[in-house]
Image 1 (cartoon, one colour):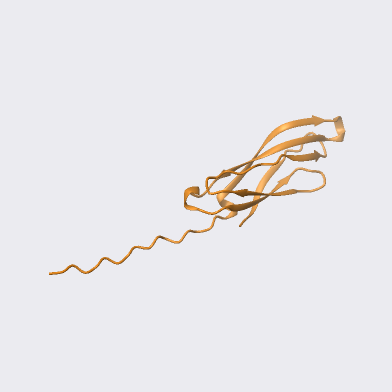
Image 2 (cartoon, rainbow, N blue to C red; image 1 turned 30 degrees about the vertical axis):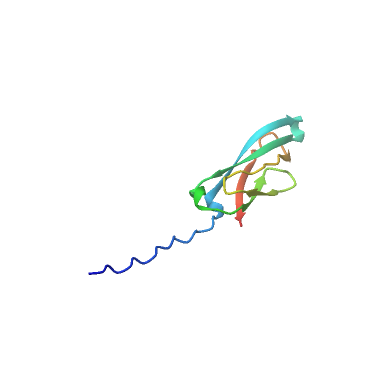
Length: 111
């Protein structure tokens, strides 16, 4: 009696990451305030994987994010993230309207 051949297994398709899969935290690296004239602030965006197992994605990913708090409007940047999760952040320089402004960041696109 012969055993029928086992059908080949196929890997589940990899789902591309979405903006919800990442989080951006801001580390303030410099801050100088000028009384009621506002502040000059430098922040370093720190990318964190929030919702996926990063090891399942085997291609570079572009992560675009928006930093709020600048008196001229949001600052937009994009990081290229390699499959090992490495990226090379650029500092973001902001001018805030007053000392009470707290900068935040949100991932807006992943591609």
